[in-house]
Length: 212
Image (tube, rainbow, N blue to C red; front, side, top):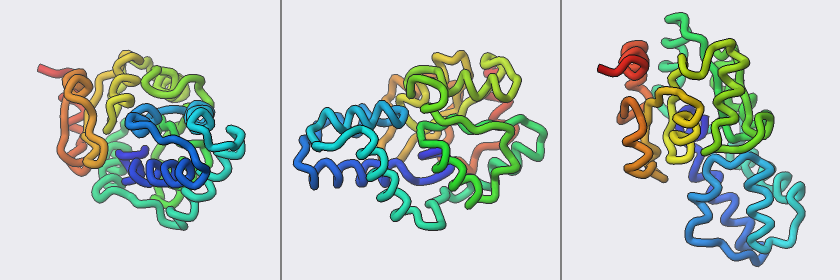
């Protein structure tokens, strides 16, 4: 969801950075990269380790409060994302969201975008076990759809996301995040690369699933 349906990775990053700075913590050079794809318990524990003087639960509450203020009633949807989802749903593909965001945030975004009815399932990594790059959230999303993971195509924007989907046995279409681009090694793992989510069509999914 983050970086694919909504332009939000930099919002998460800014909110966490601000909290660490205000609480006298120590933001590491690789903190942004490390937390991308983490489940909520994982990134909360990581923030605590940076010396913010809060419990993990307090960190979660504060980050989500600030995130909600930034989003308001209109999360920053990426142009073309809603149309791409609706086109794939209309073509009869079973769709799921496999996200590192907490479930209430996923629901907020999908409801705001008018897409709740287009997805057969949505899963937060905090419900599935380990966060990305572990495959847990993708395996659980496939299970809830009733489709073998090996028969799924994932759409991802980040290094940890691509690695998670590949580890689940899925083909991957990567749409590189412009703010935090995936590594060249992760891009090389993908079956297809798109410049924009609006380029995602039934044909690109078929090509990724059965590359020539």
